[in-house]
Image (cartoon, rainbow, N blue to C red; front, top):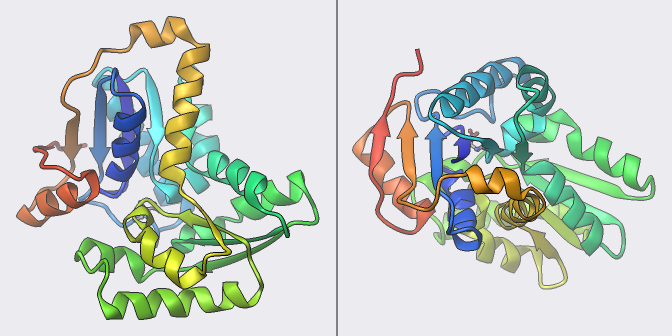
Length: 263
Ligand code: DGL
């Protein structure tokens, strides 16, 4: 199975894209709803959670692990690869970085995401290695996750906040903007409107699905061993009626959540 984890339900935007591009495989998802958000926590804590989430998915039969959470992708990949050296990991940072590099013409790239993602410095590191002339302008946008989870996708308040967050990036003249959080594909249209037509958006959920597709094409032996399609299984560490609604918002259809206890 393809195992996917996120700090909560936002990672279902990634599941939606994987289902679009790879409908032939079964997905098992774990959303750490009891401990969400990760974006305000230290790298050390996020690393510990990421290891536990991976252990759970491997026990359930996952053969590859997709870290859908941008925060965990920004800080936990070295730890995960060291802890589980045999397992292929996919994360959202590298494909987003590559796509931004392909898209930018003026070498001015913007990034929005949680505080932990922005403060991790991972994108600065990647871009400065790839091309020292690239300027990365990053702005943490912590208010967006709760607004999206409330379903305030197009409200005037949300639009105003997005506009305010994007002003400093626009003033720097960015031509490419990385949507560095699981939740942002849901407000992509408003972000595009506020960023302006000139700015190209990088949506990690699309990029990572393509990366997995390529990997499976080049690794037919592993692909053969993956369980064929079926309804995705969605596990969470806490459940409330509101979580069901949020899951539906992200996945675009109704889905049953199963609660598990990680301890
Ligand atoms: N999943 C997180 C991310 O993509 C957003 C929510 C959180 O802070 O846990 O960074």
